[in-house]
Structure formats: structure tokens, C-alpha cells
Picture 1 (cartoon, rainbow over the protein chains, first blue to last red):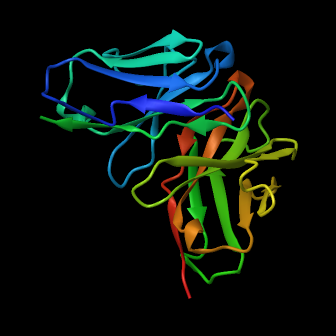
Picture 2 (cartoon, chains in turn yellow, orange; picture 1 turned 180 degrees about the horizontal axis):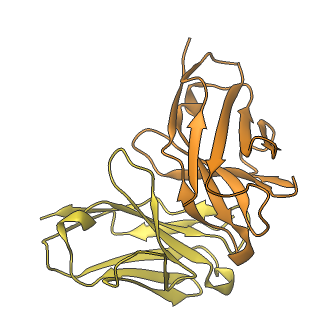
Length: 108
Length: 121
């Protein structure tokens, strides 16, 4: 099973700043089959990025994903108040599908 | 717009079987290219994929839960279901049903709102 490790565990930033979240895999993720999700308290996760860099329908272009192999990044170019949430990466290049432990993005 | 809704008991006794149903609207559960997955989230914790069923009824389960999990499909009702046997307090979690975009590898594009299941006597 591929283990995903997200860093940092918590990221404290202010609106308007740039956020960079990391997801590192224990082995190479085939075909860059990596997704990112956003979860707000009391809500289900929402798909942001799939295929490492493709934005899901309706996702603002301030969200971008990059990376391949074992290192992936989610970047939020300019934080809006509604972006403060927990973010999870997920790999689907091999079975079973696995998630990272999450990065909490909090207001500084 | 595809929507998913979980239903089932919110309280299950230890050693019994947890049963949840997911009703899908806005799209056919028999559509090719999609699988139907269950994911759970322990209170205050991360996400754990439980397993999926394909549109044709093939299943694949997380090895960590494989011996206790059954996912089934009812195309006539556009529903799929989860059964988890021999539950303990460690199975207390929010359970989500999700659409699994298998044709593109297996990410999750639509989620139910989640159902909290507590295991307690």
C-alpha cells in the first residue's frame, strides 16, 4: 500500500498570502494519479484537483496542483477567507486507494 | 447533478453488523466508467477508503477491512449498500458514499453528506 505523508500538519497564513501544501508518497504514484480534496467542518470533502494538476469542475484557478513520482504540491495562489480548511491528498495509481493524513490551513 | 444520500441506523451494538444504503439521484448507477465507493472518517481523523463496487457488480475491498466488508448493488433502486460485520468501537465513524471515477483511475468526484455511525452498547 502507498503511504502518503502531508506536510506541514498545520499551516498558518493570512488572506491574500500564497499557500504551498506538500504530499509525499512512499513509492511512485503511477500515471500521476493523485487528487486533492478540501474539507470544511461538518462537510464532506470536495474534489479540487485530479491527475495531479487538473482542476475539477467549478474550482477557481487560484488552486493549482503539480508534481509527479513521489512528490506533489497543491498551491493556492492568493488565499480567500473561504479557503481555510483541511486539505487531503489521495492516490489512485495503485490499490488500495489511500489518503494522506491532511494539512490544516488556518488563519494567522 | 449527481447526488448521493446515505441512510441507515446511527447506532449499532458491538459485534453486530453495520448496514448503510446509498441512494443515487441525477444519474444511473449502471453508467459505465464509474464505480461506487464507501469511505469513512473516524472522529477528528483522516479518511479511509473501504471499498468499491463496479457498475457490473465487481468488488474490491481495502485489505485492512476485507474480511468484514460486503458492498452490493441494487440497480432497480439506483442504490448501493455497505455491510460491515463484527463491529467494535473502532468502527465508530462518519461513513460517506462516493462516486469513484474509475475510468480515469479512481478519484472521487461526488460525495454524500455522510452518516455518523456510533458503535456502542
